[in-house]
Image (cartoon, rainbow over all chains, first blue to last red; front, side, top):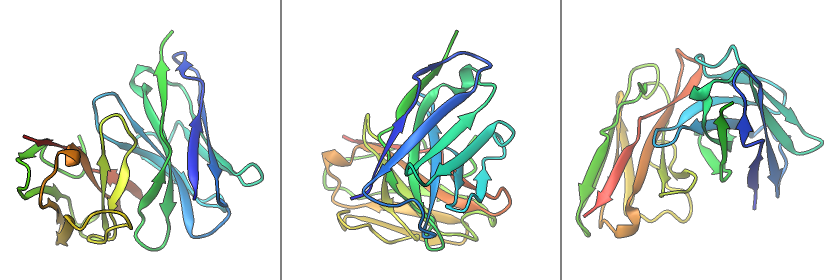
Length: 121
Length: 110
């Protein structure tokens, strides 16, 4: 049973870089069958897709965040990460990582429980 | 403002059938599969429907979905109190080269 778990600092100061990690257990992240994605959700609001990476490092990012986002994979640690630079209060949200089925239905079929990130001085 | 348009709220009484619409464009729903997610209060979203109308293992057959042109819809029959949740549609957008979500529909079971 594949499970995903986000980890991060909880609190980030404005203008700093937010770094989050998603640890995958019970499976591999090297398979071409899946991409690995990040999604966020401000309190009381809807879901916003941040981006995804393939096992070979091919990435897609939300155009509205692309200039500040980097998603990367560490297959040796079975983790993937999100870096979001120059954060502001608008980046305060619950951040989710998710497994993204590739080549078939593009579904986000397994989600982490989410981690709360607050941007504040 | 979300790329895919959903009604912000829907409601029904136990046993009723409710539908939730999702409207998009030729570059998203019109060109790609639609997936639906259920988010129970205080929890992470869960895949509810994939490939327009397929249910993952464990999802009751009370949940069904369809797609036509640039629109999709989710139907819940035999409404139960545990169905009270937020529901999101999603699709890939070829013009953005990114995934887009609907704004979400909050379903209330009266």
